[in-house]
Length: 522
Image (cartoon, rainbow, N blue to C red; front, side):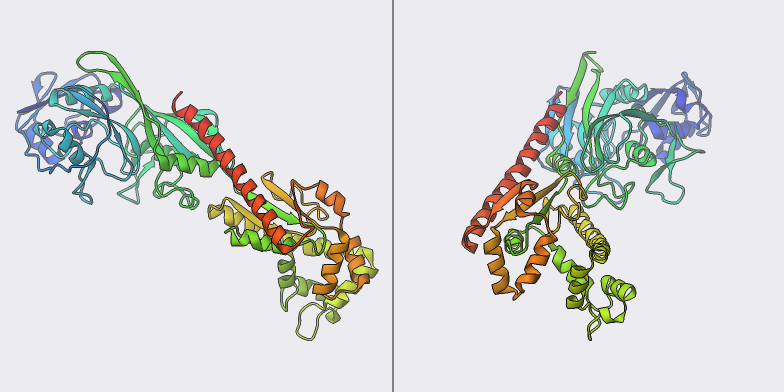
């Protein structure tokens, strides 16, 4: 016979006997528990009871005798990270992506089967969860405590029920919760989904969670150290989601922003402490999170570098951006956006038609650029009005471009913006923007424009006068590229910038990794 003994805790006051035993020993079926009770194998305070529906009270001692169960688990030989062990228990570091024990949807190659290959004595305990005294979700990594014999399992289960074993998790979450906080909302089965849990105002079981914010990342995400004082299914995930701070990568309790950053929930059991059930020695363990957790943290911190390429007309901005595009960086051009806006039926074309009349459009329905230039050259107030309207549309599209590439996980994205400073956009796209100026003498630029675009000198002078002087523009940039020679030299300068950019990004990642490593090991 296997004897199970447990004391009723305060939160279980008044519930059914069979429900309490099932909650306490989840590896035993409810049918087996009810059969044993009706057969006289259950005692409450040393008195036999045969009513599975009997209501229990705080402090009662319940003893249940069960026939041994045949263990049908097949050992699976896989590497298992065992951090510590003696004859009675072991501490393991469970990887994410593997279920702890078999269930209806997962019957093979579970973590307990891998442990069974390393600890064959577990088979003596019977059942499908031998030695398991607490569980981690399939996609949660970290510390697990394993009982290597039945006596130890009972003692550890009792210690868990009396909250004598303390666990702490690391969680990467969306949003920035208060520096410290707690949630004590009851948790129960979701009313509309049998596979989910939820905060319930009625019918839920007591659940208590607290946290400390260890780090706030650049893109409105946070690293939390989370403690739980009860062991409800999915407790941390449910409580944090309920508070509006879902765990990154949690497809069940997360939100639509989860997938770009991580493919699984970023939850890791990193600390565990308890009193050894036999030696009474205080035991404490910690383990850093796995690489995917660390990489997700780096993604969260390293907000994409936004790069604005600027310079006066004819300086070589487009050629420089072409090089960066060939290096794999996404590029957008303000001039190309304007060209598209001037096309038939587009916003700018329709607005200019509304503002100045049908004659603003050419025979194809697009903007008559010669007429537009004439108006802007001869009426400063109307030029200002046109620039303000068109620039607002351009700015909106550039911001959407940056946001899209941030969501896609790009490390950097490039916008070619000739009038970057003239538009007053130095702080318009966030503090991570790097302004890059392409420096080229006026005489060389004008010669290129005459040869390549066929503009008259009057037109070149007019457009030049609408822009900042070259010296002022270059002195305002974060990085200046020399383009006083030929295209081969510009490519060399572009290579230097690309290397400088990568070094800056790598330095930022390295500094963050070092600071996070200090947190794991403090």
